[in-house]
Image 1 (spheres, rainbow, N blue to C red):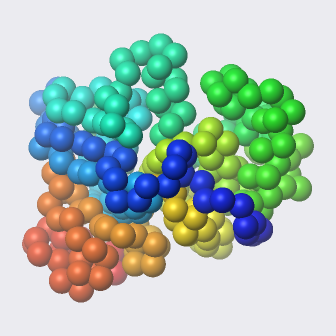
Image 2 (cartoon, helix red, strand yellow):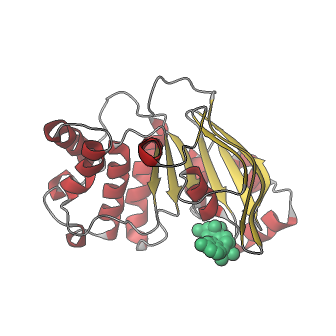
Length: 259
Ligand code: ADP
Ligand code: MG
């Protein structure tokens, strides 16, 4: 991976410590299922929060509400001080402020790697093609896939595709990046190359919310660990405290199974 000495990404002026993402009393139901219960979470600018918890605990739903891919039933969600727009161009811009990387890479199969990265900046950020391509090539270089720019997603390995997905999200100059199990679909030998890109991003000061089972990443890169079970945040702690001294039985049980 190429590590350049350009300014940290993170959108806007780096004012660390200030709340960038705020969820207050968020409730969400799927029919009878209370999938998000009393969610209160504030993520500061520059902070890396790792969300862990058993399958079905609501981690993906939480990510999707921040990006308004899913509406909530009540409560407030603020990104950089503003509530989520309901629809239209304002919502498109908001989504661009919140970069998202999924387990399945979700690249556009019929577009080249370069086009995958330039599409959003041209459409939503109104960049010129030349400007978007210059920036895209820098980002592809940074995530180590510059030589693949003219290929199609299917010609790349899973690890390379996921790094393109990260570059694509970064091209929109998001204020915060959400990662929902970004390495879960990868072969073991490709996990590290993706985690390395994420660690680099964290070190550059990007605000990140990361759902992952990679406890090594949580220990080294996270400022805080949030443990969810049954739609609730049961614990929030720094990684050292959480891993050495989990409080709830659910967390002890979960850590016992995965560590
Ligand atoms: P996690 O990511 O922690 O595994 P999810 O947020 O994906 O959990 O899911 C939480 C719960 O909500 C699960 O019980 C899941 O089956 C349910 N769920 C997720 N998406 C939907 C949906 N679109 N409609 C109904 N139930 C859903
Ligand atoms: Mg999930």
